[in-house]
Amino acid sequence: MSRDVESLSPERRIYLRKVKIKKIATWIIRTLILVSLFALWEIAANLKLIDPFITSQPSRMVKTLLNLYHQGDLFRHIGVTCLETVAGFVIGTLLGTLIAIILWWSEFTAHVLEPYLVILNSLPKVALGPIFIIWIGAGPAAIITMALAISLIVTILEVLNGFIQTDEEKIKLVQTFGANRLQVFLKVVLPSNIPAMINALKVNVGLSWVGVITGEFLVSKAGLGYLIVYGGQVFQLDLVMTSVIILAVAAALMYQGVVLLQKKLTGQKVTQKH
Amino acid sequence: MSKEIVKVEQVSLKYQSLNGEIEAVAGVTFSVDKGEFVSLVGPSGCGKSTLLSIISGLLKPTGGRVLIEGEEVTGASEKVGYMLQKDYLFDWRTIYQNVILGLEIRKKLTPENKEYALELLKTYGLYDFKDKYPSQLSGGMRQRAALIRTLAVKPEILLLDEAFSALDYQTRLAVTEDIYSIIKSEGKTAIMVTHDISESISMSDRVIVLSRRPAVVTSIHAIHFDCPVRTPLKCREAPNFREYFNTLWKELDVHV
Image (cartoon, each protein chain N blue to C red):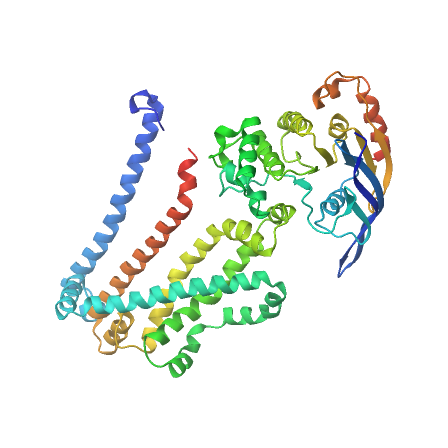
C-alpha cells in the first residue's frame, strides 16, 4: 500500500477501479431505493391510490416533525427515549458482565443457577411489565427496568459463554507461571474476550431499544414509544410513522456508536499489522 | 555435572470422572541431572504430558512425589519453565509485553528483570520486534519469543510439552536447532515430551521410554554421538542415529 499509483501494474489499476466503481454503485442504488420508496409513497398518496389517513405520507410526516419541533416537544421525546435506552444499555452491560464474572468464578454457582437462567431467558420479559410498574411505579425507572430485563440475561449468557470458551491452554500457560484465579481472569479471560463482549454490546443496543419502547407502550408520559402509542390511540398515523422513522434513525446512530467503540478498542492492532 | 536436579519418585495419577477412573501414570521413577536434556517418549495418550504437568506442579499426583533440588513440588514451581504445544503468544500484547508476562504474574517486574528480558530479546535477535504484535512474526520467531518468555523468569528446568508439534516439518527442524542451542547456551536442564523418535534422539542425552497407559518406565537409553559440536541436525547425520532409532522403534512397539 506504500507504493505510488504510478508504480502499480495496469491489472492492479483495473482491479482497484472495479472495486471503487462497485462501492460507488452500491451507495447510489441504496440511496435510490430509499428516495424512490418515499417518492412512490408520496405520489401514491397524492393520487389517492392509498389512503393517507391510514398510511400517512412523507409530506405530512415532515409537517408533523416541524410541528413537534415548534411545540418544543421533539427533542424532549427523543431525549427521554434515548436516555432510557442508554441507561438500560449501560446498566445491562455492566451488571450482566459483573454477574457473568461471578458465575465464571464459581462454577458451582453457575451450575446451581443454570436452570433459572434458562427459564428467565425463554420467558417473554414483557410479561413482567405490569409487575415492574406496580413495584417501581409508573415512570422512567420502570421503563429502564424493562430494558434491563430484556437485555440482562442475554448479556450474562453471551459473556459467560465467551469466558468459559477461553482457550484452556492459554489458561494453562499463565498457570505455569503460578497465576491465581484473579490473574487468570485479568491476564487471559478478560482480554481474550473483548471481541465477544463487544458483540454482546451490539446485541444489547438492539434489545435495550426493544425494552424501552415496550416499557413506554405500557407506561409513559413522554418518549418515542409514547408518541407511537398515543398516535395510534387517536388514529394519527402521521405521528406514528414520524416517530417510527425517528426511532430508526436514533437506533442506527447508537449502533454505529458501538461499532466506532469496537474499532477504537480492537482497531489499534489491526492497523499495526501492515 | 552429575548433580541430580529433578527426582520423580513412584509418581502415579488417577483421573476421576463419573464414567470411571482412569489410571494415567502408574509409579514412574526417574531422575534428571543438572544441565541434562532428557526426552520422554511413548505411545500417544500414554500420560506423558500428564507427567510433565505433575513435575511442574500444575497437577497433584495421587501417589509418589516429585523433588526439585531436594524440595517436594506442591504448587506451580518457580524453578520450572513450561513450553506448551503452541507458542500461545497473546495477540493483544506486543512481543515485549508477552515476554514479561511471567514476571508480571509473579510480581517480579523489577528493573533488573526487565533489563534481563530485553537482554534475552537482544541476544536472540528479537529486540527489533519487541514492539510488534505476534501476528507480525514468523512461526519460528514466535516459538523463540515463547522460549524467551519462559526464560525471562529464570527457571532452572525447562519442560517442553510437544513444543514443536504445531509447526510444519521444515520449520520444526530449524526451530529445534534454534531452541536447542538457546537451551544449551543458557545452561538449562530440559525435560521434553515428544512422540517423535527422531526428535528425541537428536536432542537428548537420555531417552526415557514410557509404556502404554497407565504409563510406567519401560527403559532408559543414554544417547552418545561423536560429533565435535552437538546440534540436533548434525546428530541426525551421525552413523549411530539409525541404530538408536531402530532400538526405540522396537521398544515402542507401534501397532496401527
